[in-house]
Length: 509
Picture 1 (cartoon, rainbow, N blue to C red):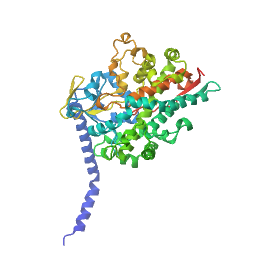
Picture 2 (tube, one colour):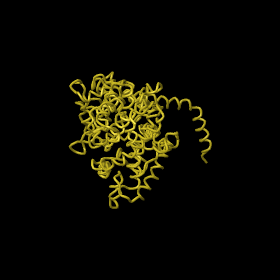
Picture 3 (tube, rainbow, N blue to C red):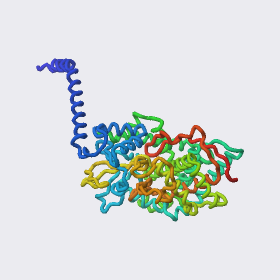
Picture 4 (cartoon, one colour):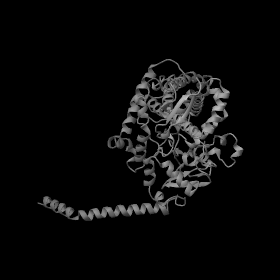
């Protein structure tokens, strides 16, 4: 009889004796593979001719590390300052900052085959269903068609009384806070409260109660979503593991941010359920969808995923624009005085301001445009995949499969696009002849083409109304500790905004 046990003992003994050799071979193979992989990326990859650091060409690690830290936007800005309008920021990723790149990457294409899809390594899919942000071409078109009536000009006019209710609460709340004289308040928090209550009512038919009760548990969770999504995004870039990004992060990296994101999902489910049960017709985002015949509207999962997205995109972005614009005005008293003069000569009272008449104010509009340029709520680039046949971007032929993007922060802060790019100059959007070298068409904070932001008009309307009424009503100044509020902020998709302490007193009663 053959001695299988003896053979096993021999094999086991051989394995023990050769463990050092096995480990050494594995390490050697890994080193050879990494060197070969890096060498190919640097020397022979189809993007090898594009400028950029060799480390970024060799590996994704510097790219992912910058995203993880929240300073990817500054890293890309520095790379463009060094290498020019197109930079290779990872082995298969190109970043652009010229205006033409917006059209070539994001604009409408003649046929669906030419459209650049959203890079699946970057966009985080909702566990319930696709969303208007990350859905494929067909999903996005259906979602947009169903949402469009709620974001139309007619709906905005019908929504204005509802919006004014919360703007009045915002103004009245600040008035009570400084009724006895100048008092410090966190304006980031106040802007969050008013925009969050507005979007809550428009999305779910009821506010979140921030202006009545202060910061809610939901608002605290909302502020954690960006960080959690970045964790998912990093894992998605890792071969073989990408499809399991959510499971890996949820089980192996259960941070406060991840828990907050899950809490946001559960609270959204409660709100959506109540809105479905409310049959009253009202001019909100859900009304048209809920009136669709069976099978033509949203599934419950699609309501959850898209509502969660709208809450985040519809409140955080507008609050960010308001916070940044106010900070820049407070840092530049001469600009603030110009806006005060425009507002006080146009209106005898702040409650006379409407969405329509604030839209006619030239300097207010310019302040918000310059605020969007210097402190765009969209921080990085939003990458797209070049179709299989390749495409021309900003005069350069790009092979199929490459990830390309226009990076907002880098483009808007580049001297290639704006003279005196780090200065707050609203006038550049009024007297354009004084700034002949400015390429204002590069400013696309709401993106462009078939995937541009559906809430653009609402964001501008809210921004003008809230900022206009606040500046008319209150005299404000930055506290000493908030003088450098904008410096060194982290940005994932939008900014992680710290407290901005502002001393507020009544300008008019």
